Image (spheres, rainbow, N blue to C red):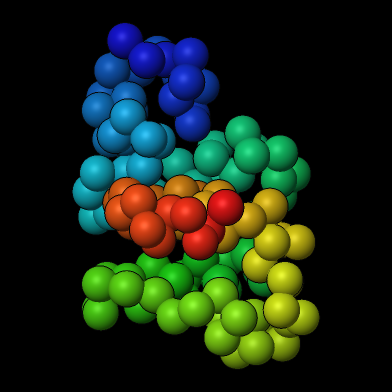
Amino acid sequence: MRASTSPLKTTDAFILSLFDEDDFMTNPDLWTKSIAEQLAANAEIEELTKEHWEIIDFIRDRYMRLGAIPPMSRVCKAFGHERDGVRKLFGGCLQLWQIAGLPYPGEEAKTYMV
């Protein structure tokens, strides 16, 4: 069992089964706000504010409708942030993707998210 590396820091087999070996959710339909809050806490984000939730909801909606998300610079601009605004809020694009409960984006996309 990979409890020690789980993004939720749990030994619950069901919760662990929701994540792949790279700590991405395997099925974004099973994501909940509670899971997002746990992931954020483990990413050392004290609280998900309205600003966080707006971006999470936007990213999830875009992914669920189109199977992709826009470049983070476009997301920042849409929400009135400087170019690295997402990084300031979430610690990075990769953390945003994980907190939003989205599946593994692929190796190439992952390299741009770090």
